[in-house]
Length: 181
Image (tube, rainbow, N blue to C red; front, side, top):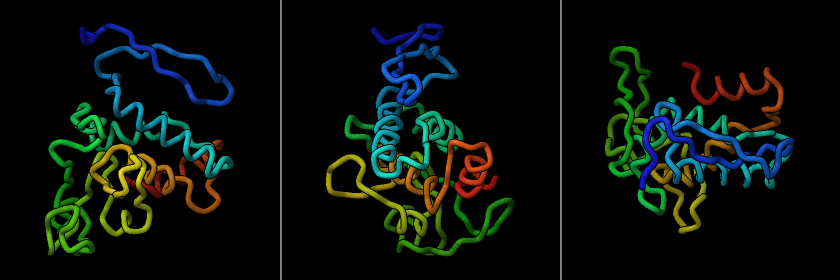
């Protein structure tokens, strides 16, 4: 049976200081759907191999994923990690509190040939995806609507340059670069 609010599920910790440990995460407002949690953890494991000096932790990706898309709309992803339905942010046409960002992808990811929209579980602007998009799922396609692809790409974006997410200042700079709001 599926866990209910108040139940605890075990989540492995990939922090090198507590390797092999597990902690309990309550189901409810703090829950992370299993496939999405797996994506966060696999992404940080990959970044630890590719850029060990960065210090990215899965909890950072989880925080971003919670804010940007509610962990892919509460885990509405296929087993392969594709968001269903696709997750689209507001049209970035400069009206109201949003920036004006003209189309960069010919509507490929966001469906608009006039204005861009942030797309996918980690809410990538198409022009940013063009520079950081990566195939994290192993299917040969880098798709911002796939939680495995998007989390690895988010990790690369956060760790860009000489970012050191092990320090408070380095983490803050990376988070503000990701989404200044």
